[in-house]
Length: 384
Image (cartoon, rainbow, N blue to C red; front, side):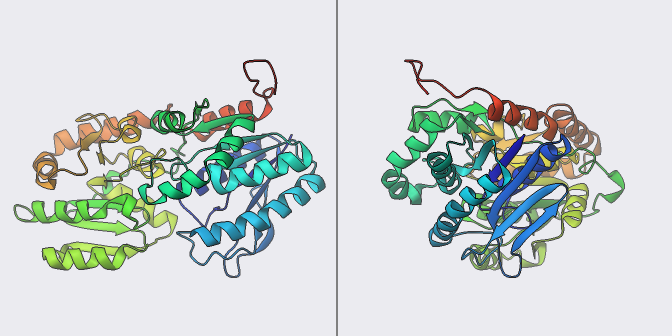
């Protein structure tokens, strides 16, 4: 079959949703499907290329940063993508579309549906669900009629976690199915020889208020008073200057490294060498970073939100903590394990085991394939 994937982010642009889009597209291509991805370009990264059997069309939107996109930049993608989607659908004889994010991807898919009748599936990713980003509450409210129309007319709506499914259904009374993210366990795997001699707390992701990185810095300060520790923060974003100022104020600048974005292979090695991943987000869809860390045998200390609790079993493959609580409490739980190799190894083995055979891109692709090819969803009166 022939599918159009609509996502304003696609590697090397974007975060977890971009990775999910890429992995599902590649898996579909390996199965013999034709996949066209309609995404935003940046700088010289424009035009059409074929990558691993997937046709990637990068349009010239206003996006300036590979790591974040503002409302105006999204709007530019939305306008251009709506025109390109119809053109691509007709020239490639597209059978169905998969839109990542209800906004802006879902708007493009709904427009395509109106113009051509092509059915679509919406994959909710986190920030597009009301309740995840408080500062966007007015934006969500204004767009509510449009969002609900998009979800209602979709062949199916899915989310990567039970928590995001429930949040969406609470806000918009329409059914959502869970399609978890996957992980390549051949790429992300333990390598004990890489473990750093100095206990290392790792963070990977955008430096955004959602990620709550101030918690990690205060955690480092709490531990440093008692034992040696360092933090490696991989990623960049608008919060970096403020976080660097916090580190200086806490007197831990010499213990914290802000590396910026690193190549994927260096990130993989960072998982293998760290002692804990500290993931203090205020919300998530399903964190690819947590999946990658667990697959690498890296125990995870994560904020106790529903989406993280689906992956982290407290004291089994990591720890759950209150992101608004006192970091000293988490410090008291994890710092003894810096020297307790036996119990750390137990957590590491459980981390890897919790991923094997449970999260794979093949399984996610199976679910997306079924949603895209099933019959249209009917209302209670049997109408489409």
